[in-house]
Picture 1 (tube, rainbow, N blue to C red):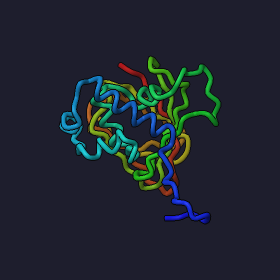
Picture 2: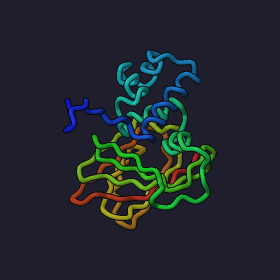
Picture 3: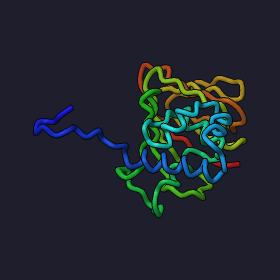
Length: 198
């Protein structure tokens, strides 16, 4: 493919955050002494997908990132904080890290200033109507979550129960097993998520 001046068109590289995230995931695997085959066995994700992810050839879905966080025993915010440099105490709204999973229709904004040693973190989540995300388990068993719906409605399945959470409602729970987040629509849902490690 050639551009208007006859040069070969350059394929755009990965976003800086995606490239740093890919590098951190590769480093974590090496730090644990795991081969790609071992990581594939532990996560149930194919070796080729993990390899492409570590080379920043693909972006992880929310479910895939959830599986990786589980085996590395980190929350998603902790993992994302590890790819940031020298975390500040104050992060302006336009500088907060936003991660998007186009496949599932999930957008995640890290509201809290990033720091690997956070005891509590605040995240803003947005799901488009019909979006449905399932997690096989928490990154850390017993993780406490508070979900405050700001706009729209959210259906949360956790601990064998299904909860319909509307605008202004807040649900608190601890995650020990599978969980599911679904936006029933007709509008997108925007919610604040407070995460507290056990």
